Amino acid sequence: MSIVESIIDIPTEHEKNVCGPFDSYMKKIERTLNVTMVSRDGELKLIGPDSVVQKAKTVVNNLLELSKRGNAISEQNVDYALSLAFEEKDDQLLEIDKDIICRTINGKPVKPKTIGQKEYVDAIRNKMIVFGIGPAGTGKTYLAMAMAIQAFKNNEVNRIILTRPAIEAGEKLGFLPGDLQSKIDPYLRPLYDALYQIMGADSYLHNAEKGLIEVAPLAYMRGRTLDNAFIILDEAQNTTPAQMKMFLTRIGFGSKVVVTGDMTQRDLPADTQSGLEVALKVLKDIEDIALVHLSSLDIVRHPLVQKIVNAYDAYEAKLEKTKRPSDFRPPSGGRDTGRGTGRGASRRDERYSGRPPHGAGRERYS
Image (cartoon, rainbow, N blue to C red; front, side, top):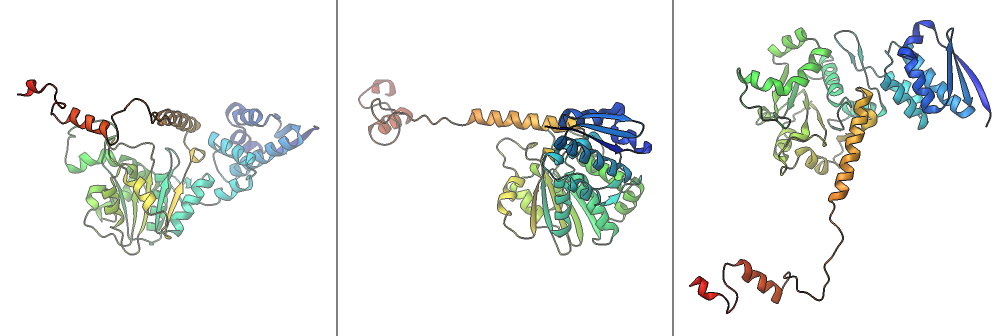
């Protein structure tokens, strides 16, 4: 295997962004691809086997192009660029970056960062109802919120309705102080946070006073017909089947619906079936409904979140495996087990019927 060298010119203004603090991004690429990288005077020298050097060169060039487009390179960008390099999908990273949904109040572009997120955004554009299912940190709610605000600004819908079931996350919160709005606001805080970041507090309050933006618990949806609205149901794994059916039948003409949820973070009682789980089975074959499943590869929070999600998935899979019933079957002959029909069943019935066995112990019941 021949060792080759390749040089990439990195402009000084992009060097820190691409290489990372203390060259941490370059060290990660070195460790992952087993290639040697030397940075000096605006040049990055790559040393290693030809195939490995080509992968590393593609990853660095993609990161450099992202930096030139004004992106602040994060560890998530590096990890995802490396994963695409192994799958030979390097070209898709820059294509994803072109899809700018909108900008936050501070001018930061909101756009998908992974292939899964891009499919999710495209599904929202093209379908009337979209289910976005995936672990924490995959941008399900945030991207849906960005799409809703953009549709509202473009006059594609007349109002935005955001809702989620008001269920405690495993804690009994008791009575909360204040009026009704103060009591339900803590459950809806994640939705407010996204609204304030993308739209701004002043713009939100102005539109909320006009009734054009509504944030409410799911219970408030009963009996309504929602026309020309962009409706987001968040934390849908905490709905019951009846609640989910009630919500989906509120939809009117000109509306678009996004339902988000994470089946691994249910807060329902143990004996209650999730409305999201039922809906995914019932609605999977309806043409104008899209089901988008995001994975740990689509997590865009701190890279440690991806490791935590993967660790929990592995633990729960192992736990589920140990809970599976064994294939042991009792022998058909020999000792009577007292099950089934015939004499054994008769004995069992007598044992639990409250009557004494035939000819035995009757004096105790007299």
